[in-house]
Length: 314
Image (tube, rainbow, N blue to C red):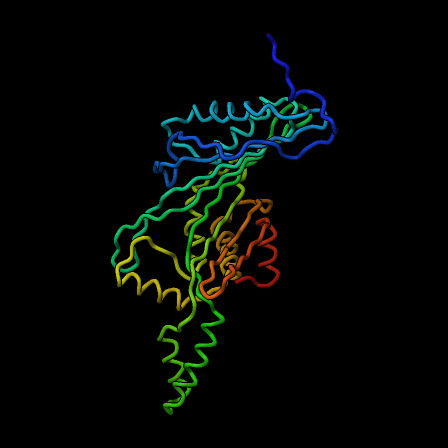
């Protein structure tokens, strides 16, 4: 008996939809390639296609089939999450002949190694891997695509505002000791100034131009260097002190963190073209407030370069 295809029928209301798909599909397929080393990640995929106005619904099972078919080629092998996402996005359009656009999001948690600041003990730090891929069917039937990769991780922000106020109060108190102003300034430049600190989550997603390959872990250093300090899972007392001192002498708002991210991207990716798209975001989980702070920007490398050159940059 031939079963009816309800999805292919004409809808009650003939309006098109931008995105229809499935989310939260987990696949244990192999090893993410990071710094040419295999890292175990169980990625989760969200896949979408557009739906024309004459189609009632998408054939959902095909989405899952596409994911499993594509990923079967990578089982037990090293792969890049952004490359797998591109392969899925293209295959979606091959399976769904009525669709002209597809979008795939892949994400998972990975681990990188770093040494503690003082004792140089190996510590294993988690971070989030993200990838996006978009495919589009042209009028001649050919399919074009673009890919993006991202990293999200936790660092520390130390408030510059509170730091400056406490510095002023401290200068006034030390001034009561009848010291010269240059002596006071020397003292203040040597001692850490108290301020409130908190964990902050930073993320960068960058488009990878056609014909260029990159290691996503390059974004890890950019994010950590943009914060007041990085975080560590393992900290001995001397490490803990060093971390606090780093943050105290390097106070930054979330706004500062995003700006440093953009500056470091320009510095570290000079060969990427101006039309490269990027997304930056930092969220500070405030320690003395009930609310959090967020700063973000979506832009292109060209826009950042132009803005830096116009205002003199850093």
